[in-house]
Image 1: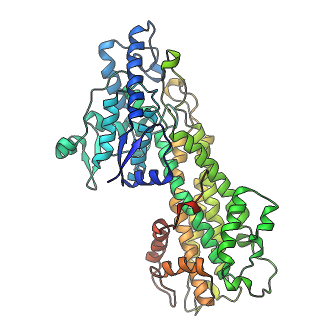
Image 2: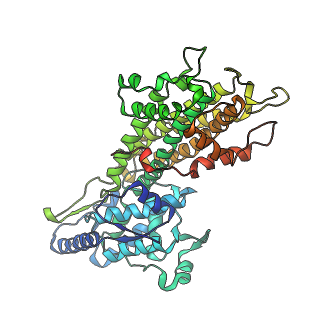
Length: 507
């Protein structure tokens, strides 16, 4: 298995995809190791020289920040922090996000301002490489003071405590350590600042955001391609996607959407046949504008998340060049909270307009039978599949209520404004999951309409159609459709894309 180096260099989306899938081993770069060692050495020296207490090093936490801790209790202080903060509740965090959390925590340490020992970081590397994953829960973070509860659960195995996913089951950490033997990670009695370094950070939010963007790029591509297939199936017009029209309003996402769709549709003979209608409904005609606006929002989210995953979001910050250990607010998740909400809205809109295209396809217009069944009345065809899409779209509207507009006072008022970015993160993944279902339903309808019309949709779209038809056959008479809806969604999650260059990028 390939080993991926974690250091100060940025990672590509492909590399983050491999991390999420557990398809690589991790290692710290030599540069990262040197920075981590230097940061710890400076912190120890600064603590020895300082006549004043240093927050999080030899003081309590949150509203207990003014309580000074004796030197002999500094390790217990950090251990107690991890234990007491592991208060997660709710659904289990999916394995892909847990792997990203670990990698992003290591990325943050690699900046070299956290004051943590290299051997603790190496244990985090070894934990990832072991294949065992900490059991982490989706609820418990306010998105400020760091993602405290989720990161505490991530860190418990470094103490030899907590529980892990192991061979598909939840197993006590001590049992897994015995089973792994010499292949296990080392456990530690934490030293000064280390518990805080592990828990303070935005890695729960950022990992969800990165995972969502890995899927958002794929979903954006398929929204365009399935939308193009629906346009051909609806006997639509190609003019709204021409370069000249969209050059007059050169929003980047609009131009990209129009270019993609025009590329596919220009090969379809049906798009060049005479039309009795002079224009199409908005859900077809306005794809460049609607999909394009979502692209713009997603590219902004990608930019913010890209900066975040390369950053140190710890507190306090160990700054050797300033001879200082400064308590500040890099753990505050507001930058992420806003764009995670924004991304949810952008992805929802791809689903909202998709469902409207599905509705148009089953409406019995443009020479297609009602509900896309050859024998309507006796058969209901795809009538209720559209209901399902509509219900999921409505649920996504509820998930688009902004979490970042909320805040709540915590820690006796010391932490009086929080981002709620963790809630934005978890509901974003619900929108992602739902969008696969919505687009899958549109694909079922578009493919059915093409088959009923018997039209040539061109080579680019035919490739998608042929691959899909290997999994979901044409609907002649009514049959049990739930398995096929699931298959359609899974098809979009797994269908190989020819080249990554077709996906949204910041380059």
